[in-house]
Length: 286
Image (cartoon, rainbow, N blue to C red; front, side, top):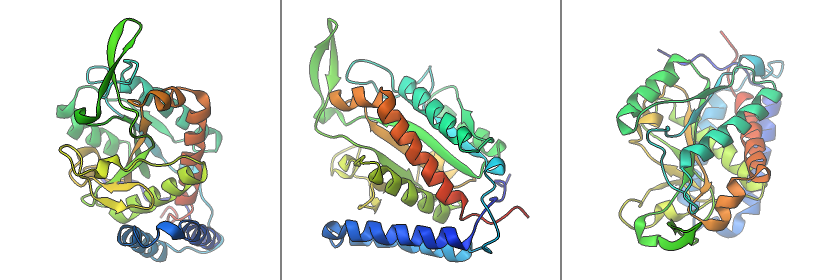
């Protein structure tokens, strides 16, 4: 089943977004050459997407018709990572997804849907099939992050030993080249990364560490966008798809920030702004 055609686009939005990307490139000039290859690959994919989807200036983003699926990562049966204070990742994912949904609905995206799934790894294929049945224009999987065991230390919380690591902090984004709409996935990841950076939220580089369980390749090292080609929920979803790790709940300070409304709302505003920019690039309903 194919995802529904996108529902919006205009040349003014294209010009505005191109200008925004130029400003970001200028702002990050000091890191430009060290990270050049990843950034240029993403910008090239984004540029091709813009050219392929340029629409008349009279077209407008039809927010009410633009369907977004917010995939709540993990499940009660398979709750994901454990935070520095012993809280399941799934609870963080559920809370943040609800706030993002509220922001999007207030912005006019009435077709926004939270997606809850059962089971663990065995259910990942079913998760993609469930998303495809909803026929979204955009798929965002909401997660929170941890680190490999080599970085963990112990501390005591309310009389119980817990694991933590304060070495890394920040968000990260993942896309799959195996997704049938990879260019659009990379385009949304690009605008989302820029919105998060503009909100003063840095990304983490620890997934690129040359250690077992990590060693992920950057798609765009200047924006915290990684490749995760084999991830089922990204490659099997028929819509443009991005997985967002909102931050590291294994980091003691960041865990507390991620649990609070100030950080959650900053992330939700960044997601909403990125959806607006992405929606404005879509072809109209046919």
